[in-house]
Each structure stands twice: as C-alpha cells, then as structure tokens.
Amino acid sequence: KKTLRYILGDQLNHNHSWFQEKNENVIYFMAETQQETGYVRHHVQKVVAFFLSMRNFASELKEKGHQVIYYEIDDKNNEQDLPANIKKIIEQEHIDHFEYLYPDEYRLDIKLKTICNKLDITSEAYDTEHFYTRREDIEKFFEGKKEMTMEYFYRDMRKKHGIMMLNDKKPEGGEWNYDKSNRKKWTGKPEIPEAKTFDKDVSKVLKQLETMDVKTMGRIDKDNFPWPTSREECLDVLDYFCENLLVHFGDYEDALHTDQKFLFHSRLSFAMNSKMLSPKEVIETTLDYYYDHKEDINISQIEGFIRQILGWREFMRGIYWKEMPGYKSKNELDNTNKLPDFYWTGETDMNCLKHSVNQSLDDAYAHHIQRLMILGNFALLTMTDPDEVDAWYLGVYIDAIEWVELTNTRGMSQFADGGIVATKPYVSSGSYINKMGNYCKSCKYSVSKKEGDDACPFNNLYWNFLYEKQEHFKGNMRMNMMMSLLKKMKKETLDNHINRSREIIKNPDNF
Ligand code: FAD
Ligand code: SF4
Image 1: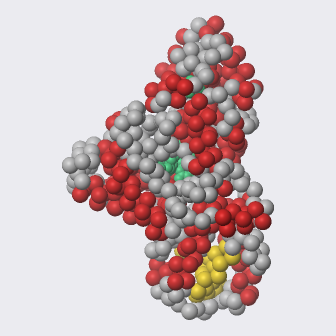
Image 2: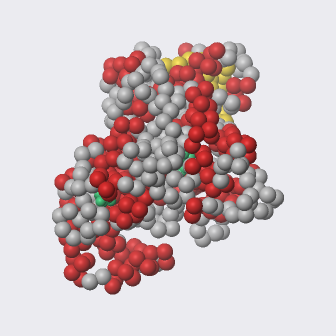
C-alpha cells in the first residue's frame, strides 16, 4: 500500500517511531501555508522559526533516506490550504492510504478528521509520542473531584513516573513543592550569563514572506536570531540551560528587571512546543545534571523547573482537551473592552508595560511573570475582551500554540473560565510589581501614590476591578480578605479609584 504521512509544523519529533525505519512505500509531506500564517497575526520571528525548523526537519528526514515532499510558502504547487494540498498529493502520487499525527490544536483536529471522512482511501491517526499524558488523562484523573488542582496532578505525575521520588510515596528532599523559595528579587547579582543566540541566515525566508504578502507583527534582528531551529541547536539550548542557568532558575523565577529580559529562564518553550525536544528528555537531562552537581545546585531550583514541565505544561494540555471547544469563547467576567493600542507598539509611559511589550515585540518572548503580572494583569484590570487578549498572545510569542496559549491566557491570566485553571484572578496593584523588580524606579508614575495624576495606574485599577466585579467573587473564599478590605474602604477613596480608573480605561493609550 502506498502511504502518505502528513506532518504538521509543530510535530517535529525526530525520535518518533515513524522515522525509525525507511519504507519506499511511504511518502512524508509537509507544507508551509498561508492558511497557517493567516489565522492570527503572528510575530515575524515565530513564522521564521517555524519555517526554518520545518525545513531543517524535512532535510534531515531526506538525509536519513526517507521520501519527503516539502512545499515552501512560495512553491508554485502549494495550494496554501491543508485539504487542497493533501488532495493534490494523494492524486499526484497515487496514494492508497493516508496517515497523520494527532494535532494538538482543536481546529486542526477537526480539519484533519473532516479531510479523512471525505477521502475515498483509508486513513489512520497516530500519537505524536511527545507528551507524558494522553489527551483524556486529566479528565479521568479529576473524575468526581470538585476542583482541578494542578498540585495534585503534579504529585501524581511525580509518583507515576518516579521523578524526584525517594520511594513510591515520598518526594526527594521531603517537600513536594519549593514554590516559596522561588520568589527572590534580582538586584544585579548573581551574574546572568549572556543569552544564547544563533548565527543563521534569515534573509531568504523573510523575502519569501514579503513576496507572499504574509502579514506579521513584531521586529527581527537579521544578524542575531535568538531561537533554535534544528534538533542540534535545541540540544545546545538545553545544555546551555543546565550548565549556566539551572543553578539559579527557581530563585529568580518570578523576578523582573529592566536590564535583563531572560534572567535565568530556559527559553526552551519553542524547542518543546515544536516537539524538537521532548519534555521527557528535557527533564531527564536536567535531572542528570542536577544529580551530578548536587553540591552546587539547591533542590528548589530543579524542582521548580520540573514542576513547570511535568506539572503545568501537561496540566494545561489536559485542561485544553477536556474543555474545548467551549473554552475558547468563555468570558465569565463579561469583559468587553478593546486591548490598548500600545500592546502593538510599546508606546506607553507605564514603565513595566513599556518594557514588557517592547521586549515581546523585539524578541517574541516575555517570561512568565511579565506575561501574567504585567501584561495580563493590566488587560484584566482594564476589563479587556478575552478574545482581544488571546489574539495578541497567540500572535506575539514564539511558543504560542493554542493548547498552551489559551489555557494560560483565558484561564490562568484572564480568569475568563471562572476558575477552572486558577482559584482566583491574578491581579495586583503596583506594589507586587515593585516588590519583584526595578521597573517602578524609572517610571513616570509613583508606585506609592494612590491619588493624583502621577499615581501608579495599577493602584486605582486594582480596587476598581474588585468593585466592578464583586458579584462574580461572592462565593470565592480566596477573595474574601480583599473583598472585606474593599467594603471597609472610605467612600471618598473608593470614588477616587473608580473615577481615575474610568479615565484610564476610556483612554489607556494616554497613560
Ligand atoms: P521557563 O521559565 O524556563 O520554564 C520552563 C518550561 O516550563 C517552559 O519552557 C514551558 O514549557 C514550561 N512552562 C512554564 N510555565 C508554564 C505554564 N504556565 N504552562 C505551560 N507550560 C509552562 N507557554 C507556552 O509555551 N506557550 C504560550 O503560548 C504561553 N502563553 C502564556 C500566556 C500567559 C498569559 C501566561 C501567564 C503564560 C503563558 N505561557 C505560555 C507559560 C510560560 O509563560 C511560558 O511557557 C514560558 O514563559 C516560556 O519561557 P521559558 O521556556 O524560558 O520558560
Ligand atoms: Fe508599572 Fe506602576 Fe511601577 Fe510604573 S509605577 S512601573 S506603572 S507598577
């Protein structure tokens, strides 16, 4: 039987069992399409990184002796659309059987199922062999339980896979979670090694994007591309993390700083989300490094890192498949405002936002606390429509693929799911931002002020948000303390917060 196997751009798993043996009856097919570049406005570095990684992946398959058909975005045979491309190759190559790997995105899952239903040849779907869990595992794990708490899932994963366990039940070091020691502010020390970049030629692909009129966002430095686009480069980033960054990863996980965009973060999300690296090999490699350097690396650094990948990453994927398709339109707080224009330009006087937006536009990257407690915090406090927030996050970040973007943005950050992912909204006044970093020191606004034109806008927006949304938080125990402070607030003080917030929300780009 002559078989066609289709590989999506985020399915670049070099170790997949498909590729373990050559078969002259199997043709692999990959395509860059305008359909995929056009469903949201992506960051230019994201499109470049995916296309270059796909091209490198296809070349490696060919070098290993597999038969590959690859359409670059400007290939004259490219129909620019998934069903049309597949139909064309099936006819052209006289294919008898079609196979694909389960997509991680709902939209593509439906699309591929529809394509298969319409084919008059047989078809079959296979696992991507990437994640620790299967799509449906979370649903089973939380069956009958009232809340889906990540921590319980994480502990179960540690036990199930024997990761950092003393025996079947006890965690190494005695604690499951060292989150409390992951909250240091970075003040210039310890020194942060220079960020790893790659010397690669991006001019050809940029020219192709221009010719094909692919609309992107963000900026690109042609001489300094920061993202790995081959298996080898991904492994380099992993080694670099182990050797240089792991030692302080946990300590400064939540830190913010004007001069440091990446701090001790691994920047491995693109390598993993494209599947060039598997979570298993990332965890095993970092753990091996930790065991070899136990005298230098505290357990809280490695546990913090493993929790993000074994816990949060798998948890978010499970939630996505459990809750889709309804999740994509959830808006439990009924937020309807437009996202401020400065998210697309970086033009604002609020220093924390200026830094975080400009960094996102320059590098297609912001670390977790910038995404959550600055960019997401402001969007939620200004009661922005989650559709607008999602479109921005899904476009701007190098690692943004719907299964992990949506759950983090609409769920964890915007509380639009009413508390499926987070138990309370991640909102704060300026004092949290000031506690974790130095943005406030060089800001036009004063973080300690709550009144007047130079008061930090977050200080007013925070109380206004609690006031506006109080009905939604009535039954939420974790909000009780803040709600009772709100109730005790002097009317005059509250009126000031509300009035200034209305000004900010009406015209956020003036601030
Ligand atoms: P590190 O800090 O070095 O962490 C290591 C790894 O842990 C990451 O590479 C990632 O794979 C995993 N991880 C950490 N936190 C999470 C999380 N909350 N959910 C899932 N995996 C996690 N991550 C994405 O991969 N794609 C997204 O589109 C995305 N959107 C986000 C949107 C918002 C509003 C927020 C708050 C978070 C988002 N995250 C997303 C999670 C997290 O911010 C990024 O994974 C992380 O910043 C990537 O950088 P890093 O590789 O240097 O991470
Ligand atoms: Fe951001 Fe307010 Fe601090 Fe300025 S003062 S950096 S707006 S938190």
